[in-house]
Image (tube, rainbow, N blue to C red; front, side, top):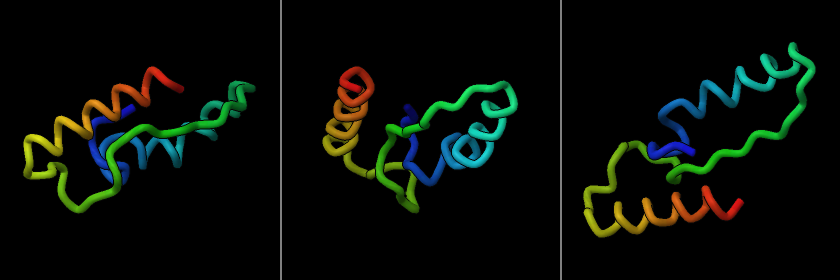
Length: 64
């Protein structure tokens, strides 16, 4: 789970590198991301929209 949009933060790096690193240690696990939608901006510019997105991210983190 990351607070940043899907195309920012750690996810792009991890999606490319973590599967290979896990495979080297004999682990094969599917990866999934919980993040904000991809965006050119790291912030929505709206406090209400940010709070709604944040609540959704937290809910998704505990529901999966």
